[in-house]
Length: 115
Image (cartoon, rainbow, N blue to C red; front, side, top):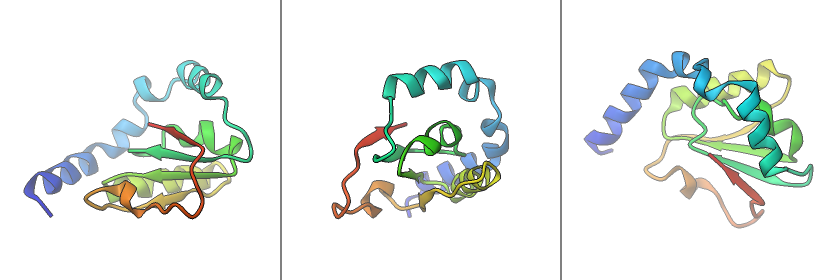
């Protein structure tokens, strides 16, 4: 792992709890507007690229067949999974990798991507 990667993981781990509740990423109005703009359908597989602590999870996961969060930082993925569980559903998460998207396969295509 490159030194830059280690620093990024360290920095996001240090702020994950504060970022998860920051108003600029968790206000219901903008999240609802984003949901309306994307208009996900129940049969879709949605990828949340750089999902962080799951700020979009509660908004989108109930509206799609499968919600997959990818992120570089294990602490943010842990927070995203916990938030989903608290809301009563599970999400697929992909742990750190140099390229988190490299863990996805073409066997079941994605139908929507958000970030």
